[in-house]
Length: 251
Length: 163
Image 1 (tube, rainbow over the protein chains, first blue to last red):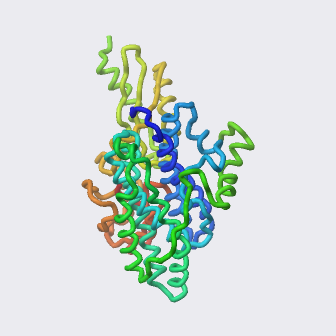
Image 2 (cartoon, rainbow over the protein chains, first blue to last red):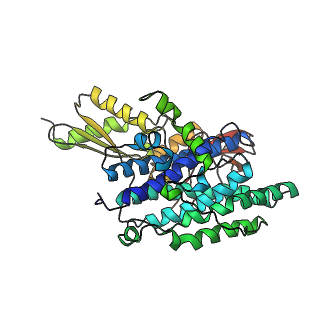
């Protein structure tokens, strides 16, 4: 077991919340995707992310040492206590947006989990060891769709490019530096160290898809400090309402 | 007098019979997700299982089933621990498990050999045996399967995804 380290729980919470909120958004697609197989695919991708989130939340709870478990952290924290980035928390009611976001997020998670394979935190290595293989399928899925839509009809190409343009201001926040002490202790993976690899992988896919890397000013972010977009409150309410309306509900 | 070793094997044998809730034709031993069954001097049993995928929804059902079977066999204290490391891979499925999957109509995964996921190898139809098949979706009815269709017999089938 890793020794408590200042900021350790908060770091793990950031990873957990990215996965959790992305899973919640992914679940929205069930019954709404362009075809049945895609409903199933996005549900499975969300399920992988949820599984990663559960293990990470449970770990964050143990590191905090206040007796909070995964459900306490998922259902009983308020908006400002979440540490997810803005990329994953906004609505994704356009399929192009969902695929643009999945491409970026899965490429990010692929590098993140690969880096965490050598973390000094054994629980993080354990989660990463499983997740790195699951995420390879997510990258592959987003890759196929982005190429299919980008290198498709004029309509699909224009919409895929518009989706990328809409997501791109939120990409940079993924690489917000983490506490150097945590990186120095070998616990955290430094996102600035794998930023280039993520962007390069995404750019390769965009090139294959005849799309261009958007040139936009990054948004300020702030998700890691608990500052979120207006949309976030709604998704948190949706995610938590059952647990809060019926405390202890089981089925 | 029963030796500790025999008792340990007896607990393992009971645990090993637990079927996978989603593909009940294979057991958790066949799948390679049963990692350890240890019995201490007091007769308390500690079972370690590992999930196939991080979000595998079958884990709670498996833990309940382990509790029930071992308790019914007379073990008073049974606890089930989920472990993540080393990460499960489809290479952990036993030869018997692979054969059962195929007989059940689920095409077995190709060996990963620690290599990258997603190598396009020919997949044989578990119904008619034809190699002329195509993947219709990389994500299937459960996290661990993809959806395929056979061009020869036209039947759809599941495949256990290499992981």
